[in-house]
Image (tube, rainbow, N blue to C red; front, side, top):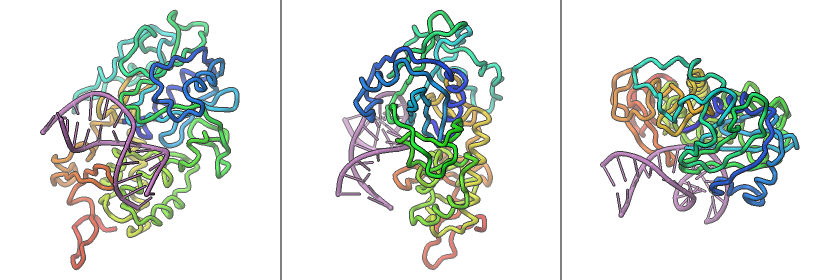
Length: 346
DNA sequence: GGAGCCCTGCGA
DNA sequence: TCGCAGGGCTCC
């Protein structure tokens, strides 16, 4: 499922393939991903026809393609959304979703070979769960069949809309890939993400510590720091040595800083290998999966051994989300009258 | 700040 | 057949 590293991999691909392209037509196979579009599907198509894409930007898990009329096509992939570029200049390469995931323990294939700036099947390929297709005006050197951007989404928890761009609250660039101090109106309430150079990390720590909720819930709150989903929240907490049920306000400043730093570090390492393809639901714009799943320490590993101490990892529910943790490496809240669980000093 | 909903596929 | 998984929005 796409979190910040996966969305960033998608953004980079969109920037590479789509910047400067013009949208010729819009095909809506299922209008449900457009449920938040003002004016409905017809307004969506109308707003995009004839517009040129001027870039690709991202804040947290929100993506947007700025358009030449000052508005933007904004997209959130939810948990199963994929944006796939089809039929670019070079011949199609077999890159079926998840088809070249290596078994755990085996070295990843040559990333430079799988990430050539080309590929992806032609437009005659209509994948299962294709919801929206943007047909792009042809350019010299394009594949004969044409070029398109497909929104493929199994579960449709995300969506797309054409929206106004509004000034950022702090006057700084809107996000990765956006030199302008603008963000889509529907992402204006989203905080800067952990990999954003403009993020005021000290202020984020203060905001996190002002909440009485569990630290795990706070990490997932996109209004405090954006881009963290369930996978990287669990990984960051494990690396930071803090159990997700600890009340955020009860943690030391240093502990919150350590967790945020650890989470950012995990996301940076994931980004370097194309993100996490925990299942077949995440691939980049060229259909290639990421290779970070093999490096996950806790997420999806409940009942298995902790890679640090060998204890059996546990799973529980915090704030309605699963949380996998090590009972030995991650400190829990102290019960009344006890000295708490063993673990790293905070 | 928490619960419920959206939505589909999968495993029990 | 049912419960779960997930992010974000709406409602209370």
